[in-house]
Length: 453
Image 1 (cartoon, rainbow, N blue to C red):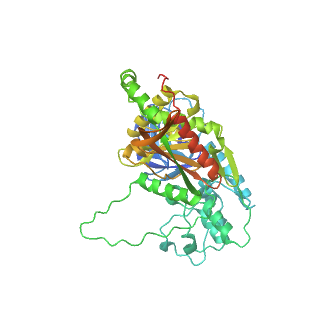
Image 2: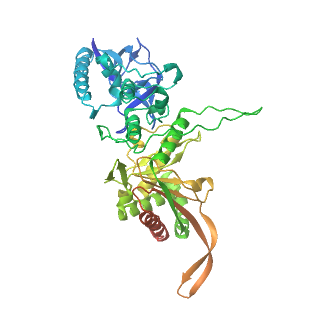
Image 3: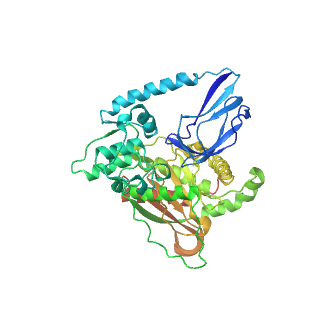
């Protein structure tokens, strides 16, 4: 029988590692093609890993809760089927050869290798064994890779100083980029480092002071954060550290939109089987405004601005657990209202049923958060990295409004709503940020009430 190496799949262009949640099979179990072997989690989404081949699970190489780099072998499957991949021994030799080449590059100190290769490099060359002077590993509860410790040793960073650096990796892990950015600020003459892997962390990773010690009273309930809440907490703090958040606000008259939806919602529900919400209308208006102001549809990589070709709009969605996830409507500018409504409904259903895949939540270039769902009229959302802007739409409320007519000003009851546009002031100036949200309001106010859906 041949041996097939099952590797950790790649679950998104920015995902370099995943945590093993559950093994659904154990050594000795028979496996059919597409059987779910294990469940894994990244900082973006939980996923099931199917078997690409039938056979018998011979060996599991990692335990539950282990963090594993993508493309790393996680299990061996014995199979009678022909396989195109190389036998385990040959693949291992190729990997070692590649790591040895990278080890030689590493001596140059201008080439920074991928964090997922640290342990392998350490095993290949015991000379890089890290030992920080006067450090006591028992005093630190954090895990540091051999590469991080080696950099700390070279730069004379004590363990106490290393513990002050906030990590941007999985579960707050400190990686090489965090240490190198810290050194850029600490050193009197910052040195230029060529980073092979781009990172959206552009500032000094300074540890945020912990909250004051809470004195619990009798009867207080202590609730441990779940894994997703910890990830959200880390990502929100990281975004506030990276981006210079500024907000602009516009009040928009939604009367035409409200009347149009009231006219079509019942027939739409009967025909399509799901509710006609305001979200496809918001998405359509934002996609049109992005085409008018394409410099909103960007991201930042160091001192470079990346102008995005595609308009992929994220829809912030609340889960039954109370947590938040942002599925992406890809190429939103190429869809009509029925296409947007159908896509958004499908993504929302998948989110509520925990069926989103990595491709459903990656590649976003702009995000909408509908805080009006919770009765809020105004809010200042946090930008999802590496995007540079996000819009919150508030609740639609009836108000007396002054209306300009050819016969003079009149006061009428209108359906009004606030738009909150939060943007990264590093790359989006107030003029652009303000004009963009105003343009979205104009598209909504000039909505064609005669169009069908």
